[in-house]
Length: 261
Ligand SMILES: Cc1cc2nc3c(=O)[nH]c(=O)nc-3n(C[C@H](O)[C@H](O)[C@H](O)COP(=O)(O)OP(=O)(O)OC[C@H]3O[C@@H](n4cnc5c(N)ncnc54)[C@H](O)[C@@H]3O)c2cc1C
Image (tube, rainbow, N blue to C red; front, side, top):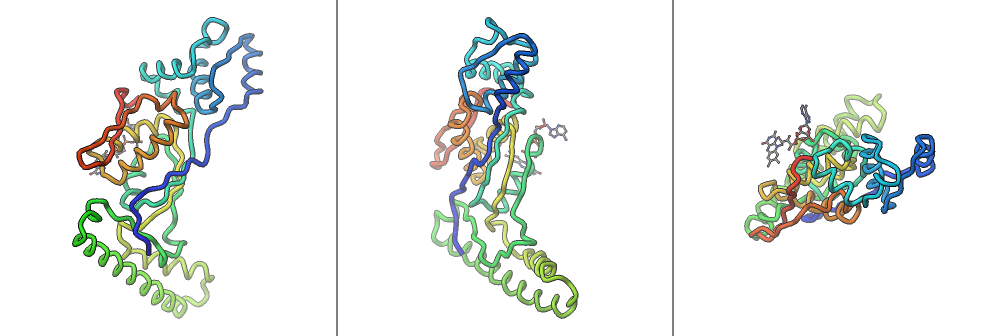
């Protein structure tokens, strides 16, 4: 069993644009538009905003993408940002974290590792920094996690035997599922989970604002800041207004003046 302290955020998918279809639309509308980014997500949000006011053509379509989206954010025209979405895989995070994460509903999609199907006898565990900072507290934590994990393994084995005996007709896969779904009840909140998540730009901004705040729980704040670092590079026109600050405990918080766009 490994003890984890750092989340990993993988950006695995992003919105792209079909330029030929956009060109066809512009031609059908007898207009033109060119912008200064080739980033699909930034292009899509700008295009969506421009459709609202049909602001295409020589004069109206001249602003830079950054200026255009900065104005959209300042005007709180947030629905425009719902058209750009990204896909992430997050690992090295605890089940406590995922309980908080999935409270974010609007604009999000999740697919999380199933403890009913996946054998957790080789699971890893996420230790809160404040516990890791003290050897004595770390020892208490480690022993609690180790003994829960050991109980899980013993229960999974015992349940497998019991289910084999009582329900011999069940397919092997269902027997394993029945054993694991019951045995997992003793696994702690610290158990690592892996989660695939999709979020649009508006939802991500809201998440970073709430969960990157100084008073947010430290593990989810760490993920919010990690997401922000990824998104600042990925889509600076949409996430360039955030600032990070170093807190007295050495951790980082994130915030923006443009609240709840
Ligand atoms: C510091 C902190 C402490 C917290 N403590 C607790 C706690 O102790 N217990 C607990 O249960 N939760 C707690 N939460 C979770 C919190 O209550 C929210 O569930 C979570 O932050 C998601 O926020 P949200 O609903 O704004 O997000 P989303 O679900 O992503 O929604 C985004 C926005 O869309 C709108 N919206 C979404 N759904 C609806 C709807 N059904 N009706 C109307 N408008 C909607 C709202 O404007 C909402 O702000 C805490 C959150 C934080 C940041």
